[in-house]
Image 1 (tube, helix red, strand yellow):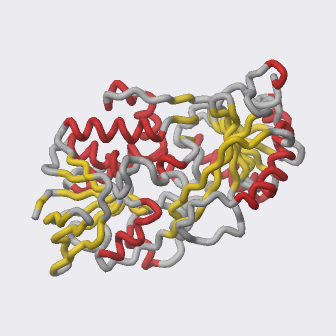
Image 2 (image 1 turned 45 degrees about the horizontal axis):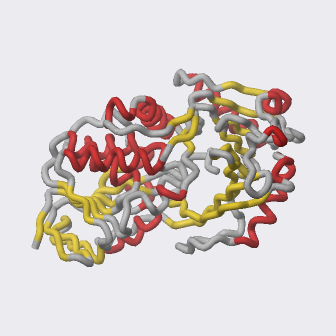
Length: 391
């Protein structure tokens, strides 16, 4: 039977980031297990790539602030180039309740030193070609927010960790986690067992199932989200002079908060999506095409260019939802069992800071971070305020 000091379950952005920091800190032998044949093909590879500071919980702002600072210097620090565009996030607010909540968030964000603008609907329309801002009573904008490359980030962390001794086992499924006397002793996999005293649950939407293998109840549920890519017509891009001014030329992320409809430029196309209020928890990744008309109805009101556009690609991914929309980072109730999951749709962008914090906690270092909002133990205490700015 093989052995390792630490086994990480899940080869997405969280698992790769944690592996990077553990190997940087000399944590001993680390094995990362990924069920698929490639890293980052689960939720990491199916998200829109957005990164933002605009959260309502100070802990989430802190995670994003540290993570975005690393994205800005990723090649210098980690050693691999990534695509990163800081064209900003624009939140459109169409109800008094949303405006009031976001005004509180902006006050908090500014108190922490972030430059976040409070705009009128007309000001939002002027900065966003093609946008119909009818009914928008306010908007917020942070120029330091943006879009980056999930695959590049994940592979960059993984390659750097491999250079420092990380072992990656792809196409390997975790089938059991043995516990003896309240502590982790072994991980069972489809390709053999690994004796270990430490396991990191970085399994994203599947984190609840992985926790259950060790007898731990972790309230993380998967929820399907769709992403669509549209072009003005087959074979044409939005930069074609015929369609100039109908969509933003930059990769500005625009989010209509009250409907959850969002869009940004993706190469020659336009990426857009929206939450489905009728969606139920589950692991189904098939594209629900009968949901598209509901999305395009909202899209047509906010971005009329989409009325006659051709949807050329679509895929579905999974959010990993917790009851308060905050993640779990830290111990999971057993000696040697740790979690880094449950980010409720904003995980990729926080992976660098979350991985760093967890590695520090695991190695007995001061993480310089208040982890109380992300503690596993909070679920036993009942409902918490959590994160409100979820899309």
